[in-house]
Image 1 (cartoon, protein in one colour):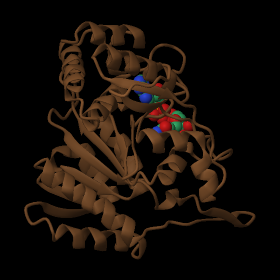
Image 2 (cartoon, rainbow, N blue to C red; image 1 turned 60 degrees about the vertical axis):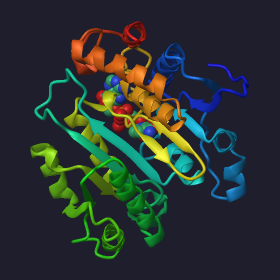
Image 3 (cartoon, rainbow, N blue to C red; image 1 turned 45 degrees about the horizontal axis):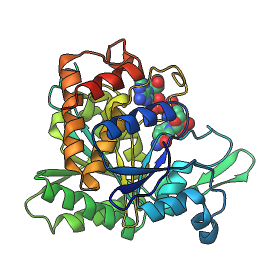
Length: 340
Ligand code: NAI
Protein backbone atom coordinates (compact mmCIF):
# COMPACT_ATOMS: atom_id res chain seq x y z
CA UNK A 1 0.00 0.00 0.00
CA UNK A 2 1.74 3.14 -1.16
CA UNK A 3 0.59 6.60 -2.07
CA UNK A 4 1.10 7.79 -5.60
CA UNK A 5 -0.68 10.12 -7.96
CA UNK A 6 -2.29 9.54 -11.33
CA UNK A 7 -4.97 11.62 -13.05
CA UNK A 8 -7.00 8.69 -14.32
CA UNK A 9 -7.22 6.77 -11.06
CA UNK A 10 -9.53 7.39 -8.12
CA UNK A 11 -7.63 8.49 -5.01
CA UNK A 12 -8.82 6.60 -1.95
CA UNK A 13 -7.64 7.02 1.63
CA UNK A 14 -6.92 3.62 3.13
CA UNK A 15 -6.81 3.27 6.92
CA UNK A 16 -5.62 -0.25 7.89
CA UNK A 17 -6.74 0.21 11.52
CA UNK A 18 -5.98 -2.05 14.50
CA UNK A 19 -6.15 -5.74 15.44
CA UNK A 20 -7.25 -7.72 12.37
CA UNK A 21 -7.58 -4.42 10.47
CA UNK A 22 -4.17 -4.51 8.73
CA UNK A 23 -4.73 -8.17 7.74
CA UNK A 24 -8.18 -7.66 6.19
CA UNK A 25 -7.16 -4.31 4.66
CA UNK A 26 -4.08 -5.80 2.95
CA UNK A 27 -6.18 -8.71 1.66
CA UNK A 28 -8.80 -6.30 0.29
CA UNK A 29 -6.29 -3.97 -1.39
CA UNK A 30 -4.60 -7.00 -2.96
CA UNK A 31 -7.97 -8.24 -4.29
CA UNK A 32 -9.01 -4.84 -5.65
CA UNK A 33 -5.72 -4.45 -7.47
CA UNK A 34 -6.06 -7.96 -8.94
CA UNK A 35 -9.66 -7.25 -10.01
CA UNK A 36 -8.52 -4.22 -12.03
CA UNK A 37 -9.83 -1.47 -9.75
CA UNK A 38 -8.34 1.84 -10.80
CA UNK A 39 -7.22 3.30 -7.48
CA UNK A 40 -4.32 5.29 -6.08
CA UNK A 41 -4.18 4.34 -2.40
CA UNK A 42 -3.28 7.03 0.13
CA UNK A 43 -2.41 5.18 3.32
CA UNK A 44 -3.11 7.00 6.60
CA UNK A 45 -3.03 6.15 10.29
CA UNK A 46 -5.88 7.04 12.64
CA UNK A 47 -5.00 9.01 15.79
CA UNK A 48 -7.31 9.98 18.66
CA UNK A 49 -8.98 13.34 18.04
CA UNK A 50 -9.05 14.85 21.52
CA UNK A 51 -10.12 18.44 20.88
CA UNK A 52 -13.70 19.42 20.05
CA UNK A 53 -12.57 22.72 18.43
CA UNK A 54 -13.43 22.73 14.73
CA UNK A 55 -9.95 24.04 13.71
CA UNK A 56 -8.21 21.22 15.59
CA UNK A 57 -10.50 18.55 14.18
CA UNK A 58 -10.03 19.83 10.63
CA UNK A 59 -6.25 19.92 11.15
CA UNK A 60 -6.17 16.19 11.86
CA UNK A 61 -4.15 14.62 8.99
CA UNK A 62 -6.64 11.77 8.45
CA UNK A 63 -9.62 14.15 8.39
CA UNK A 64 -7.71 16.31 5.89
CA UNK A 65 -6.92 13.32 3.69
CA UNK A 66 -10.56 12.15 3.69
CA UNK A 67 -11.80 15.67 2.90
CA UNK A 68 -9.37 15.74 0.00
CA UNK A 69 -9.93 12.25 -1.50
CA UNK A 70 -13.64 12.21 -0.47
CA UNK A 71 -13.53 8.41 -0.31
CA UNK A 72 -12.00 6.11 2.29
CA UNK A 73 -11.71 2.41 3.05
CA UNK A 74 -11.16 1.72 6.71
CA UNK A 75 -10.19 -1.28 8.82
CA UNK A 76 -11.61 -1.45 12.35
CA UNK A 77 -10.13 0.76 15.07
CA UNK A 78 -9.90 -0.33 18.71
CA UNK A 79 -11.56 1.84 21.36
CA UNK A 80 -10.48 1.23 24.97
CA UNK A 81 -13.34 0.03 27.21
CA UNK A 82 -14.36 2.19 30.22
CA UNK A 83 -11.11 4.21 30.08
CA UNK A 84 -8.76 5.98 27.68
CA UNK A 85 -9.48 8.07 24.63
CA UNK A 86 -12.88 8.48 22.96
CA UNK A 87 -13.71 6.47 19.86
CA UNK A 88 -11.80 7.56 16.74
CA UNK A 89 -14.60 6.01 14.65
CA UNK A 90 -17.25 8.21 16.26
CA UNK A 91 -14.97 11.28 16.02
CA UNK A 92 -14.39 10.70 12.29
CA UNK A 93 -18.11 10.29 11.60
CA UNK A 94 -18.81 13.55 13.40
CA UNK A 95 -15.86 15.47 11.94
CA UNK A 96 -16.82 14.52 8.37
CA UNK A 97 -20.58 14.65 9.03
CA UNK A 98 -20.95 11.06 7.82
CA UNK A 99 -24.55 11.05 8.94
CA UNK A 100 -25.81 7.87 7.28
CA UNK A 101 -24.52 4.47 8.31
CA UNK A 102 -25.64 1.99 5.67
CA UNK A 103 -25.36 -1.76 6.25
CA UNK A 104 -26.80 -4.28 3.80
CA UNK A 105 -27.31 -7.63 5.54
CA UNK A 106 -27.82 -10.40 3.01
CA UNK A 107 -27.11 -14.10 3.25
CA UNK A 108 -24.33 -15.35 0.99
CA UNK A 109 -24.86 -18.61 -0.92
CA UNK A 110 -23.60 -21.69 0.92
CA UNK A 111 -23.88 -20.19 4.41
CA UNK A 112 -26.13 -22.34 6.60
CA UNK A 113 -28.43 -20.36 8.89
CA UNK A 114 -31.97 -20.93 10.19
CA UNK A 115 -33.18 -18.22 7.77
CA UNK A 116 -32.56 -18.83 4.05
CA UNK A 117 -33.75 -15.47 2.74
CA UNK A 118 -32.56 -12.65 4.98
CA UNK A 119 -32.11 -9.44 2.99
CA UNK A 120 -32.15 -6.43 5.29
CA UNK A 121 -30.89 -2.89 5.00
CA UNK A 122 -29.90 -1.32 8.34
CA UNK A 123 -29.85 2.48 8.20
CA UNK A 124 -28.36 4.00 11.34
CA UNK A 125 -28.18 7.69 12.24
CA UNK A 126 -24.47 8.19 12.74
CA UNK A 127 -23.85 11.51 14.48
CA UNK A 128 -25.89 11.84 17.68
CA UNK A 129 -27.98 10.00 20.31
CA UNK A 130 -25.90 8.70 23.26
CA UNK A 131 -22.83 8.74 20.98
CA UNK A 132 -22.68 12.52 21.36
CA UNK A 133 -20.04 11.75 24.01
CA UNK A 134 -21.59 14.14 26.53
CA UNK A 135 -21.17 12.45 29.88
CA UNK A 136 -19.78 13.51 33.22
CA UNK A 137 -19.62 12.52 36.87
CA UNK A 138 -22.18 14.60 38.75
CA UNK A 139 -20.87 13.47 42.15
CA UNK A 140 -18.84 10.31 42.87
CA UNK A 141 -21.12 7.35 42.16
CA UNK A 142 -23.49 9.33 39.92
CA UNK A 143 -22.84 9.74 36.18
CA UNK A 144 -24.92 11.58 33.63
CA UNK A 145 -24.90 10.70 29.89
CA UNK A 146 -26.85 12.90 27.53
CA UNK A 147 -28.84 11.51 24.63
CA UNK A 148 -29.09 14.12 21.89
CA UNK A 149 -31.79 13.78 19.25
CA UNK A 150 -32.45 16.63 16.83
CA UNK A 151 -35.18 17.11 14.26
CA UNK A 152 -32.58 18.04 11.64
CA UNK A 153 -30.56 14.82 11.99
CA UNK A 154 -33.64 12.60 12.37
CA UNK A 155 -35.30 14.09 9.29
CA UNK A 156 -32.08 13.81 7.29
CA UNK A 157 -31.58 10.10 8.09
CA UNK A 158 -35.27 9.39 7.42
CA UNK A 159 -34.96 11.03 3.98
CA UNK A 160 -31.85 8.93 3.29
CA UNK A 161 -33.68 5.68 4.18
CA UNK A 162 -36.86 6.47 2.24
CA UNK A 163 -34.90 7.75 -0.79
CA UNK A 164 -32.87 4.53 -0.77
CA UNK A 165 -36.06 2.45 -0.49
CA UNK A 166 -37.66 4.28 -3.40
CA UNK A 167 -34.56 4.07 -5.57
CA UNK A 168 -33.96 0.36 -4.99
CA UNK A 169 -37.55 -0.87 -4.93
CA UNK A 170 -37.75 -1.60 -1.22
CA UNK A 171 -41.34 -1.69 0.01
CA UNK A 172 -41.18 -1.35 3.80
CA UNK A 173 -39.33 1.00 6.17
CA UNK A 174 -39.52 0.19 9.89
CA UNK A 175 -38.67 2.88 12.45
CA UNK A 176 -37.13 1.29 15.56
CA UNK A 177 -37.48 3.16 18.86
CA UNK A 178 -38.02 3.16 22.62
CA UNK A 179 -40.45 6.08 22.64
CA UNK A 180 -42.64 4.35 25.21
CA UNK A 181 -39.91 5.20 27.75
CA UNK A 182 -37.90 8.02 26.10
CA UNK A 183 -40.99 9.94 25.10
CA UNK A 184 -39.18 13.17 24.20
CA UNK A 185 -35.99 11.99 22.48
CA UNK A 186 -37.22 8.86 20.71
CA UNK A 187 -40.60 10.60 20.41
CA UNK A 188 -38.98 13.37 18.34
CA UNK A 189 -37.14 10.78 16.23
CA UNK A 190 -40.46 9.05 15.45
CA UNK A 191 -42.27 12.31 14.78
CA UNK A 192 -39.66 13.15 12.10
CA UNK A 193 -39.90 9.66 10.55
CA UNK A 194 -43.70 9.89 10.41
CA UNK A 195 -43.54 13.29 8.71
CA UNK A 196 -40.99 12.16 6.12
CA UNK A 197 -42.88 8.90 5.45
CA UNK A 198 -45.87 10.89 4.16
CA UNK A 199 -43.79 12.00 1.15
CA UNK A 200 -43.32 8.35 0.07
CA UNK A 201 -46.80 6.95 -0.54
CA UNK A 202 -45.49 3.82 -2.33
CA UNK A 203 -43.52 2.68 0.72
CA UNK A 204 -45.16 1.22 3.82
CA UNK A 205 -43.95 2.76 7.08
CA UNK A 206 -44.17 0.82 10.36
CA UNK A 207 -42.77 1.21 13.87
CA UNK A 208 -41.50 -1.33 16.37
CA UNK A 209 -40.12 -0.95 19.90
CA UNK A 210 -36.44 -1.94 19.93
CA UNK A 211 -36.71 -4.82 22.42
CA UNK A 212 -39.56 -6.41 20.45
CA UNK A 213 -37.55 -5.75 17.27
CA UNK A 214 -34.70 -7.92 18.65
CA UNK A 215 -37.10 -10.78 19.36
CA UNK A 216 -38.83 -10.45 15.97
CA UNK A 217 -35.46 -10.42 14.20
CA UNK A 218 -34.33 -13.70 15.71
CA UNK A 219 -37.76 -15.32 15.17
CA UNK A 220 -38.85 -14.02 11.76
CA UNK A 221 -36.32 -11.65 10.17
CA UNK A 222 -37.97 -11.97 6.75
CA UNK A 223 -40.76 -9.63 7.89
CA UNK A 224 -38.33 -6.67 7.79
CA UNK A 225 -36.91 -4.80 4.82
CA UNK A 226 -35.28 -1.43 5.67
CA UNK A 227 -34.66 -0.83 9.39
CA UNK A 228 -34.27 2.83 10.37
CA UNK A 229 -32.68 3.50 13.75
CA UNK A 230 -30.97 6.11 15.89
CA UNK A 231 -27.28 5.60 16.61
CA UNK A 232 -27.17 3.24 19.63
CA UNK A 233 -29.98 0.91 18.53
CA UNK A 234 -28.47 0.85 15.03
CA UNK A 235 -25.11 -0.23 16.40
CA UNK A 236 -26.60 -3.09 18.43
CA UNK A 237 -29.11 -4.28 15.81
CA UNK A 238 -26.35 -4.33 13.15
CA UNK A 239 -24.41 -6.98 15.06
CA UNK A 240 -27.58 -8.96 15.74
CA UNK A 241 -28.45 -8.83 12.03
CA UNK A 242 -24.91 -9.95 11.12
CA UNK A 243 -25.49 -13.01 13.30
CA UNK A 244 -28.55 -13.88 11.21
CA UNK A 245 -26.48 -14.26 8.04
CA UNK A 246 -23.42 -16.07 9.40
CA UNK A 247 -21.51 -13.57 11.53
CA UNK A 248 -19.51 -10.38 11.62
CA UNK A 249 -16.97 -11.59 9.08
CA UNK A 250 -19.56 -11.20 6.32
CA UNK A 251 -21.37 -7.88 6.66
CA UNK A 252 -20.17 -4.71 4.90
CA UNK A 253 -20.99 -1.09 5.58
CA UNK A 254 -20.62 2.52 4.54
CA UNK A 255 -20.63 5.85 6.35
CA UNK A 256 -22.05 8.42 3.97
CA UNK A 257 -22.28 12.21 3.98
CA UNK A 258 -22.09 15.14 1.58
CA UNK A 259 -18.32 15.65 2.02
CA UNK A 260 -17.05 12.10 2.03
CA UNK A 261 -17.90 8.39 1.97
CA UNK A 262 -16.04 6.05 4.31
CA UNK A 263 -16.48 2.32 3.72
CA UNK A 264 -15.87 -0.20 6.51
CA UNK A 265 -17.04 -3.58 7.78
CA UNK A 266 -19.52 -3.79 10.66
CA UNK A 267 -17.05 -5.76 12.77
CA UNK A 268 -14.43 -4.48 15.18
CA UNK A 269 -10.71 -5.16 15.55
CA UNK A 270 -11.28 -8.72 16.91
CA UNK A 271 -8.30 -8.78 19.32
CA UNK A 272 -8.97 -12.47 20.07
CA UNK A 273 -7.78 -13.50 16.57
CA UNK A 274 -5.56 -10.55 15.60
CA UNK A 275 -2.18 -11.36 14.05
CA UNK A 276 -3.04 -15.04 13.47
CA UNK A 277 -3.97 -14.93 9.76
CA UNK A 278 -7.45 -16.21 10.73
CA UNK A 279 -9.68 -13.20 10.07
CA UNK A 280 -12.34 -13.36 7.41
CA UNK A 281 -11.76 -10.42 5.04
CA UNK A 282 -15.14 -10.86 3.27
CA UNK A 283 -16.87 -8.01 5.14
CA UNK A 284 -14.21 -5.48 4.13
CA UNK A 285 -14.09 -6.92 0.60
CA UNK A 286 -17.86 -6.42 0.29
CA UNK A 287 -17.46 -2.89 1.73
CA UNK A 288 -14.95 -2.30 -1.07
CA UNK A 289 -17.53 -3.57 -3.59
CA UNK A 290 -19.90 -0.87 -2.30
CA UNK A 291 -17.04 1.62 -2.64
CA UNK A 292 -16.22 0.63 -6.23
CA UNK A 293 -19.87 1.16 -7.22
CA UNK A 294 -19.79 4.55 -5.46
CA UNK A 295 -16.65 5.38 -7.48
CA UNK A 296 -18.36 4.40 -10.74
CA UNK A 297 -16.24 1.25 -11.21
CA UNK A 298 -18.90 -1.48 -11.54
CA UNK A 299 -16.79 -3.98 -13.51
CA UNK A 300 -14.23 -4.80 -10.79
CA UNK A 301 -17.07 -4.65 -8.23
CA UNK A 302 -19.06 -7.28 -10.15
CA UNK A 303 -15.95 -9.40 -10.67
CA UNK A 304 -15.18 -9.45 -6.93
CA UNK A 305 -18.80 -10.15 -6.00
CA UNK A 306 -18.97 -13.06 -8.46
CA UNK A 307 -15.73 -14.55 -7.09
CA UNK A 308 -16.96 -14.26 -3.49
CA UNK A 309 -20.32 -15.84 -4.34
CA UNK A 310 -18.53 -18.68 -6.13
CA UNK A 311 -16.23 -19.35 -3.13
CA UNK A 312 -19.15 -19.41 -0.72
CA UNK A 313 -21.45 -21.53 -2.88
CA UNK A 314 -18.64 -24.07 -3.41
CA UNK A 315 -17.68 -23.80 0.28
CA UNK A 316 -14.01 -24.12 -0.59
CA UNK A 317 -11.16 -22.19 1.04
CA UNK A 318 -13.47 -20.59 3.63
CA UNK A 319 -12.16 -19.16 6.92
CA UNK A 320 -12.83 -20.63 10.37
CA UNK A 321 -15.62 -18.26 11.43
CA UNK A 322 -17.82 -19.74 8.68
CA UNK A 323 -16.83 -23.37 9.21
CA UNK A 324 -13.74 -23.61 6.98
CA UNK A 325 -10.05 -24.09 7.74
CA UNK A 326 -8.41 -21.57 5.38
CA UNK A 327 -6.24 -18.70 6.57
CA UNK A 328 -6.91 -15.09 5.55
CA UNK A 329 -4.19 -15.39 2.91
CA UNK A 330 -5.45 -18.72 1.51
CA UNK A 331 -8.98 -17.38 1.24
CA UNK A 332 -7.76 -14.20 -0.47
CA UNK A 333 -5.63 -16.18 -2.95
CA UNK A 334 -8.62 -18.41 -3.75
CA UNK A 335 -10.82 -15.37 -4.45
CA UNK A 336 -8.15 -13.79 -6.62
CA UNK A 337 -7.72 -17.12 -8.44
CA UNK A 338 -11.41 -17.27 -9.33
CA UNK A 339 -11.78 -13.69 -10.60
CA UNK A 340 -13.29 -13.84 -14.06
P1 NAI B 1 -15.44 -7.50 17.21
O1 NAI B 1 -16.37 -7.25 16.08
O2 NAI B 1 -14.04 -7.04 17.05
O3 NAI B 1 -15.41 -9.09 17.51
C1 NAI B 1 -16.55 -9.80 17.94
C2 NAI B 1 -16.33 -11.30 17.64
O4 NAI B 1 -16.44 -11.49 16.22
C3 NAI B 1 -14.94 -11.81 18.03
O5 NAI B 1 -15.05 -13.12 18.49
C4 NAI B 1 -14.16 -11.78 16.72
O6 NAI B 1 -13.13 -12.72 16.63
C5 NAI B 1 -15.25 -12.07 15.69
N1 NAI B 1 -14.95 -11.40 14.42
C6 NAI B 1 -15.11 -10.08 14.15
N2 NAI B 1 -14.71 -9.82 12.90
C7 NAI B 1 -14.28 -10.99 12.37
C8 NAI B 1 -13.73 -11.35 11.10
N3 NAI B 1 -13.56 -10.46 10.13
N4 NAI B 1 -13.38 -12.63 10.91
C9 NAI B 1 -13.56 -13.55 11.86
N5 NAI B 1 -14.09 -13.27 13.09
C10 NAI B 1 -14.44 -11.99 13.33
O7 NAI B 1 -16.11 -6.86 18.49
P2 NAI B 1 -15.50 -6.53 19.93
O8 NAI B 1 -14.64 -7.64 20.38
O9 NAI B 1 -16.68 -6.14 20.71
O10 NAI B 1 -14.62 -5.22 19.70
C11 NAI B 1 -13.21 -5.21 19.61
C12 NAI B 1 -12.75 -3.79 19.38
O11 NAI B 1 -13.20 -3.31 18.12
C13 NAI B 1 -13.23 -2.79 20.43
O12 NAI B 1 -12.15 -1.94 20.75
C14 NAI B 1 -14.31 -2.00 19.71
O13 NAI B 1 -14.43 -0.68 20.19
C15 NAI B 1 -13.78 -2.01 18.28
N6 NAI B 1 -14.80 -1.82 17.27
C16 NAI B 1 -14.47 -1.03 16.19
C17 NAI B 1 -15.35 -0.86 15.17
C18 NAI B 1 -14.95 0.00 14.01
O14 NAI B 1 -13.79 0.33 13.86
N7 NAI B 1 -15.88 0.39 13.16
C19 NAI B 1 -16.68 -1.50 15.18
C20 NAI B 1 -16.91 -2.34 16.32
C21 NAI B 1 -16.00 -2.48 17.32
